[in-house]
Amino acid sequence: MTVQFEPTNSFCYNFSRYQVLPAIIAMQELQSGQPFRLVELVKKITDLHLTPEQQATIYQRAQTGKPASVINTIKWYVPFIAKNTKQLTPMGEGMYRLPDAIDIEEVEAQAEDEALEDDVSEASVSEGYIYAFSFPALIKPQGDFPIKIGMTVNDVQQRVASQCKGSAIFDNPKVLDSWRVNRVGFVESAIHKVLAARGKWREGVPGTEWFDTTVGEIKAIIDFTGALHR
Image (tube, rainbow, N blue to C red; front, side, top):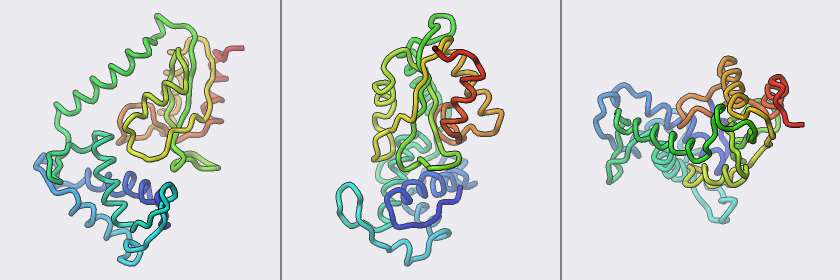
């Protein structure tokens, strides 16, 4: 994913998450699991994509109004995102390494715990809500953009808020839409499988519920299942 340069906080976030961090993770020399100083690699990758003038550009933070440089914001975002998405393991004093098998097992266990919190399964729950949310920095007026699709039998807003605690972004999550459906487990699975078959599952992010899609596409799949609560 190539992010078009502009001196804004949203650009720095997207550039950090979708260009810098994936490039670092893909470096062959890091695959051995040896620790590395992250800030040095952040600068190395950024130099490949942004000119010194672009990196030094000062902009006003929308929330605080305080000035910040593009490069300093990127240097802050990359480790923040890496830790919160579990894509890198912090070792202390600015050192990181790629996750090993134990790290991955811990993330999977956490995901299982989150699933148990909702106590939703096709066998035990017949009615619930499918929800779709994203973050303001990721939302586009037209075309596909990253959307997380999940299910709950409780309040959608509370469920989304609980999922986003410690999220690697300053923006609050935005619930794009929710649908009351029968056979909620079946419907969620159907949406995920259809979008994955269309090549829209987002790789390299925690969990399996992020897709490059639109609210309209999600609604169309729900309509096709015939499970929308009338």
